[in-house]
Image 1 (tube, rainbow, N blue to C red):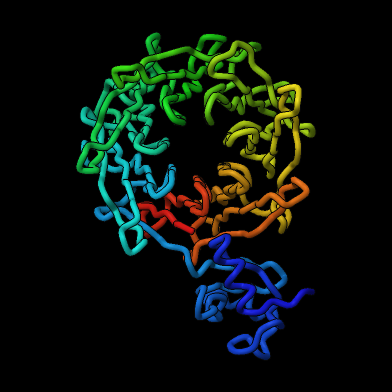
Image 2 (cartoon, one colour):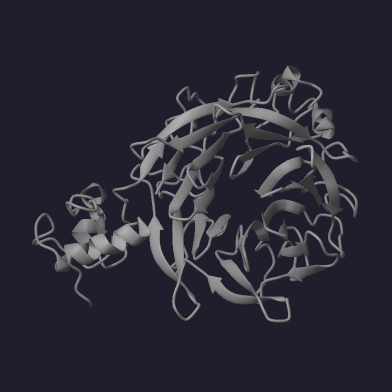
Length: 453
């Protein structure tokens, strides 16, 4: 085992802004005379040993989780029971967006979004709270979010539920309410004072009830992609995605509608979407090519026709490959809901995408949904793994992978919250050196929280 000193730790931390798992016998001080079993049983002690310069957190070499000393926990300034703050997260440079679809500002579960920014002291603060100008009952505005530069995109997949407040009290008796969900997406931009305002509301030109338009959103430069996983173009719940572009007047217009070339009933195409420059990725976790709900993903070019279908080399039934997708330049990441893995695809010289590597948790199979969320920025991949069990005493987690000199991805770190929260990892985002992890059940009654690393 290699030896680590405080100076080398600080240098590593300065480059990566994360914590590191090393051998507890390498250090003196609070861990003197303590073995790794003791460290594992005393999670609150894992941050006792921090360097004076980098405030580094140290975990034992058995790879027990390290609760990063530099993690910043954020919550809504007006958080309330059931807000689900952290259901969705997004980050771009020095802007973080957190969705709270259960917020009740515009009636029950109308939803909201919170914007956090860095101040001059380099501390994160809540800059603004966003709501839909026409928000009402059960819109779930904020269930999906995306941000790029001066553009924030917010999905409200349940907007236009016709029965309004009666839905809450008569859910089981008034099933028809579900059939009138239209969905929408709201675009926000900044004014000269730096405040965010709603610029435009987007809907599908051929919008059909219960299509879940807005269940997923993505933005890059002048392109917005919106998923509608329950659209029926190719059969019930086959799914679709819509591409919007910015015209010369600064308005968004629907440019094209995407569907799978082999679309069939139940594919859920559009459950997840991602975009980077001219590359668009759409997940279809209900695809059955490799068995029932094995899943797939499709790659499109903004300015070219055609598409390529991606599947896992070891696909199995009920993996739900495509439940989450992310893309950065020439790298695509596809997560599974139940497969316990995520897959990295790269672009070859012929312009075709191929499976480069399969990612799994370094600590083996766990009681979690590894791959339920994925994010990528340059040479960093983050994979969420919430436990998905409200009664679980095991906290969710997020795994950070980095690219080595040989072009392979290796497991760099496992993140968990200092407070055991099972939903931690339900959503993840990364931009440069900033990682954000959402935990919609943070707080005693699902008010929610998010963690910034």
